Amino acid sequence: MTEKIQHTLIVPSDIAGMRLDQAVAKLLPEYSRTQIQEWIKSGEITLDSHPAKARVIVYGGETMTLHAALKPQPVYAAQPIHLDIIYEDDALLVINKPAGMVVHPAAGNRENTLLNALLHHAKELQNLPRAGILHRLDKETTGLLVIAKTPSALMNLSKQLKARTLSRIYQAIVQGVMTSGGKVDEPIARHPIQRKRMAVIETGKNAVTHYRVIERYRSHTRIKVQLETGRTHQIRVHMAHIHYPLLGDPTYGGRLQLPKAATPELVALLRQFKRQALHASELGLTHPVTQQLMTFTAPLPQDMVELIEVLKDDAKKNT
Image (cartoon, helix red, strand yellow):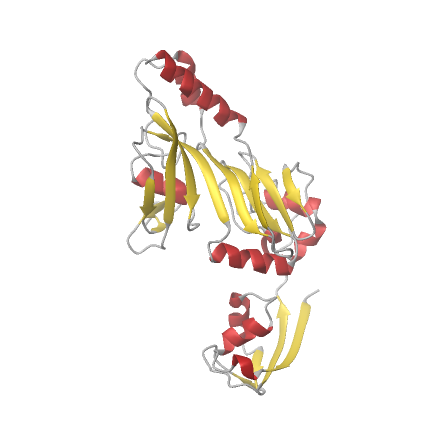
């Protein structure tokens, strides 16, 4: 059943001078800017009983009316799939995603995704866009994801994400030995020919990645990465762009590099490591209800722990 929304408000004088879309967002903060702009464009928001454009300036005293319907969300199956829950309360949920799990259903992956698991864990998430999932991790990337459980929490956390105050820190193992950390500030867009790939393209969207060295090995480096923006495949694309591709990355990793005189154990492990060595290890946010600053951590997955141990052992044996 489609949910009807009705509001009639008098525009207060203290927001005089704002554009209509800004005024509505101020008066009805539970709805997203995108949704509000859609309603204005379709004439479902009126000013003194007349349709108005988003850029119209309000002066105070006008009657703003909203008569609209929330679009029903796609219905996905709830499936009893194990979730590694790091934290949960009435407003949000933080999970540690394993490698191999797709976050959101798409063509060819309608089931066995994180979203299917979330709907089984908390049925009320069916009423939220994308079941409250704020951001995504690639299928083979492990680590922390935050999920909103209420409309107000979703809007609040979305604003934090947009304002870049929701902190996301990763650990990765890259091919090559880095001399120091740095920043990659290069725009990213879909590859013009290989449409399943992203690439650094001058006309792309702004993308900024910060990285620093944690540990160096003979032919690899373990790094900590902090995202300033959140473009598709951002870390993978940026690291490949500066010629330090993620170990095991099947899309951007290039040819496997084996250190000279590598131990048989390392050679075998490098050849069988078929996913990008990338883990979302830390997440920081302001709680949408309590306003408390919260930080969550997730330990490295076992395959990366084993890889680091073997890289260390190889370095010791070849010094």
